[in-house]
Amino acid sequence: MQPFTRFRINEPKVIQDTIEGESVIVNLATGNYFSVDKVGAEIWQNIEQGKSIGEIFEIIFSEYDGDKDKIRITVDGFFDELIKEDLVVKRSEQPGGSVGNENKKTAIEQGQKKVFEAPNLKKYTDVQDLLLLDPIHESDETGWPNMKMD
Image (cartoon, rainbow, N blue to C red; front, side, top):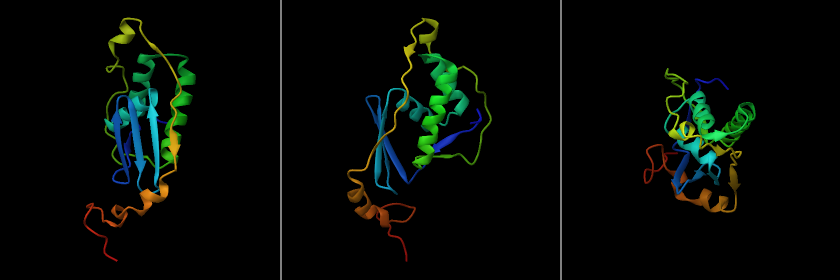
């Protein structure tokens, strides 16, 4: 993926919340829900903040210890999963900006990098039928309670 590429959460189709380092993500169109924690939740939060792929890589490289090529391949794979599940979409506008390391935290300065663990997008389908039955799916793009016109 190109370092200046930016993704956004696929709203309003996707809703999410992050609690105590775990992001819970619901795709209202499919009825599937997902969870990510640790590195995956950190990546998700950076997507939510509008950071580019390059900026996200630099943040991960600065905070986690590991082979950069392996981390890059793993994170690229995580992005592929997010795209495949229709949780994120490419931003139509691609604002400029750097992919530098201005967001590095003091952990690198103090030599306290964490061990990199591959992000894991956990998928759950057990309440898919219930989520798809919810009348919110019959609302228009302005949201509930405005019903779609046939």
